[in-house]
Structures are given as C-alpha cells and as structure tokens.
Image (cartoon, rainbow, N blue to C red; front, side, top):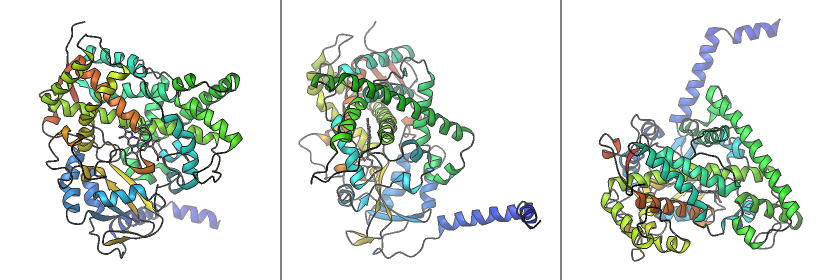
Length: 516
Ligand code: HEM
C-alpha cells in the first residue's frame, strides 16, 4: 500500500511541477553560478553571452569571433567561462596554443567515451585514435599512422572529379555548393578509406549514403554539442540516428571481416599492392601483425593491443573527422574565390600555364606537385574560416600559462577563429591575402592551426590539402563562378557557430569555360 501511495504522490501534477522547477533551478545554477577560482585573475565572460551568439538567428561564426571573442581576448589572450559545472578557458594566444598542442600529457584529449559515454559521438566511435590518450593513443597511432604515410596519386580523384564536373554543368546557376562538396568528399573518402562506392555523386541516394550522412551529421548536431545530456533520452529523429548507427557499425564490421579473410587468403601484400590498397586494408594488415608481434612505443615498451571493435571505431572516425571537415573547408574556399574574382582568375591562369587549356585537361602527379603554390589560397581560406572551430583539452594537473595558473580538471580550448582573425597575428584579418602564406613571409609560430599541431595534429591533413588542391585545379580550369545577387554572403558569411563550421545558404553560379 505504501509503495502505491508513494507512486500516486510522485505522479501528482503538483509534484511533477515541483520536480521540473527543481531541475530548471539546478540547470540555471550550473550555468550561472561559478565557484571561486584562484588562477591569477583570468577575466571571466558569462557563458550565456557566447550561447546567445551561438544560437542567434542569421548566425555567423565571424560575428561571434569579432564581436565577442576577440574583444574579450584582446588584453589577456585568455578568458574563462563557467558551463555545466566546469571551468572552460579559451585562448587565442599562439604561445599558449603551442603549449596546449605540444604538452600532451598535461593537456589531454577529452575522452568522450569515458566522460559522457551515452552521447551520440561516444557511442558512434567509442575508444578511438581521436579521443584516446597515453599508451592507448600510441597503440592506435602505431597501427593507423603508417597507412596515412603514402602518396595520394591524382588517379584516385579523377573519376570523382569528372562526376563533380558533370553535376556542376547540369545545375550551373545557384548550385548548393555545400551539398556538391559533401557528395564529392564522401565518394573520395569511401574509396580511400575502405574501397566502398557510396554513390553520392551519382545522385542515387541509396540506403548506405543516407545512413552514413545521418551518422556523420548526428555527431555534430549543435544542439547536442552544447546540451550533451539530451542524448540520454533520444526520441524521434535522434532515436532513428542511433538505429542508423547500428546499421553503419554492422556494414563496417562485415567489410572488415571480408577484407581480413581476403588478406589471409592472399598472404603478405606486395609493395605495389600496398600503394594501391585502401586505408582499412592497411590497418587490418598492421593490426594482424601486431596481434602476433605486439606494438611498441619509442622506448621499446609494449603497448596495449587494439581490439577489433577499436579497428571499426577508427574506420568510423575517419568518416566523422574527415568527411564534413573537408567538404566545409572546400565550401569556404569556393565562397572566398567567388568574392575575389581577381584571385580566382590568377589561380586559373596559373593552372592553365601548367596543365594547358584543353577541356578535359587533368593534372599529372608532377603537375599537381608543381601547383603546390595554390596552397597559399587554401591556407588563407582556412585561416579566415577554420572549419574546426576550436581544439579542446582537459588539464591533468595545474598549468601555468604566462601570469596565470589554471586548475587541474579545467577544460582549455584554443579558439582558432579568434587566433587566426586577430590583427596582432594576421594584419587586416578581414582581407583575403593568400601571400601571407608565401615562403618569404613568416607568420607567428602556431598562430595558424586549422589542423591543430604537434603529435595530435590531424592525421588526414596532407590528404585534405591535396583534395582541396585537386578540386581547386579542376574547378578553376572548367568554370568561372560568382555569388548570385541575392546571396547573403555578399553582406556577411552565414555559418554555423559551434563545432564544425559550415556555410549556410551558400549558393554559387557556375559558368562552364568550355563548350562540350
Ligand atoms: C580540411 C579538412 C580537415 C580539417 C580542417 C581537419 C582538422 C582537424 C583538427 C583540427 C584535428 C585536431 C582535433 C583535436 O586535436 O582536438 C583533427 C584531428 C583528426 N583528423 Fe582531421 N581534419 C580534416 C580532414 C581529415 C581527414 C580527411 C581525415 C581522415 C581521412 C581526418 C582524420 C582525423 C583524425 C583521425 C584526427 C585525430 C588525430 C589524433 O588525435 O591523433 N581529418 N583534424
């Protein structure tokens, strides 16, 4: 009887209202009431201010950067906020950034799968190269790293570039650039990661494509990045994303099984086969080897072995980390060149001077190498609009940065937008000046870090740069492009504001340069 009475009491409307009020009060308390901290006087900015600019209508990461972050960081180069019961320090000082990038035992990756194991991203990729620390990280890197140390021949991209060209030729005006870039990068990544054809550029929109996109998007959904606890109760679309994740896991696991069986059948890969193999095949080969011989760190210490589940997780993390980051960076690049027709034309002249102007000209590996100076344009675009908004770490012990001592357990982030758009490090930051990255110009060390730096630098950075260079070469050769008259980008770039920064409502008018 007593139990029934308690249940009846718990479900009375007034009790539920009280419980809800208590929950709201707790959340407001966590957001608004920071405890005292003795860090030497780092200035405090209310997290609500940042949240306001993050969720503002007509959002712009540049607005958040120039109106909130850079002014706040002007005098000290570091500020602190209180959010969800922890101190978060934000810096745009390249020297502080250097320490965060290089001192990896003190500035540790936040192990999402241990801190908030229920959030989508943690469930998606569990323990993996991107979130592990210490010996586990070294074990992952020893298996994954070698597969990235290879040349990326232009032949890898050719078929995808032709398909992208066809899409742009068909659509021409008001092309949804972000979607076109996402299709291109997914097909390229599907091929190099696991030799799979996602059919994204064929516009077939099959089940695999839908599942992969849903999984990648769900992992960077801003609402859940800011309010991770919502993932404790996935409903509706979010619950469907979790179901899709299971399917994606099964697809990757079956691909791994098939590739492992094939490797056992064929025995050791020849050098030639290894040059052409996808990343997953190389990782499986390295994994099989370490299962027998073990993996060791630089001092000869035996590292923990990597499980099959972690092999799957690392495959997923390549899609999660590589797909949208490359697609968004490409979209920012195309927007900048639409705004700067003179620089677009200079790039075109340069490309034509190397590969000629035949309608179907495509660079050879040597010509691709010769056109490395185009990277100045790509780097300048990544400076102004860093796709990865910030790099975050958790302190394993108190750390002294300049006159300040930050407490153990605090989160510290390098804000790439505020660093790369600060006039102290890049004069006239609002201007698009690729020559900042010429060999004769020396920027402040660590002030440009869209791929992060140090041992945790993006493992795919070379591949991402080559992909962007090839797309740039192909597009300036085949098309000229401008922003439509109604484009919001003519006033200011509309973008998402947290996590991975993508353009919003970016349409571009393309005109083919050659008749077909
Ligand atoms: C323009 C495209 C890209 C950008 C801007 C980018 C940016 C970054 C950044 C900033 C980090 C460091 C994150 C941190 O330290 O917290 C990172 C790490 C990583 N990226 Fe990328 N990335 C890109 C493309 C790729 C590609 C194509 C792949 C794989 C195919 C990839 C795989 C990874 C992985 C596995 C890590 C974790 C590395 C580690 O912790 O050791 N990324 N990326």
